Image (cartoon, rainbow, N blue to C red; front, side):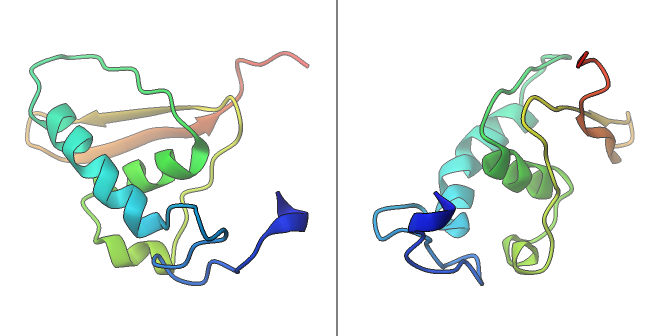
Length: 105
């Protein structure tokens, strides 16, 4: 992929390939799913996705603005597991981010 990138992603609106999604596009596509997750009564939810989409989800989880993705990236590792929770008072917590301690090499 790195050898074939058409454009550098400098902002949330940039696309590295002409037919790709920008990070803003991912945000818009993910928003209904995020709202569904937030409004569920389920106690435990497992989400499996690509790293960049999970990075966008983590920014949503922390209730940051989409434009914060221009300045931050919540780094992830392939196979990593994150643990997100919310207190009874609504405080959002990321207990582990992209943890791979369970992997044996």
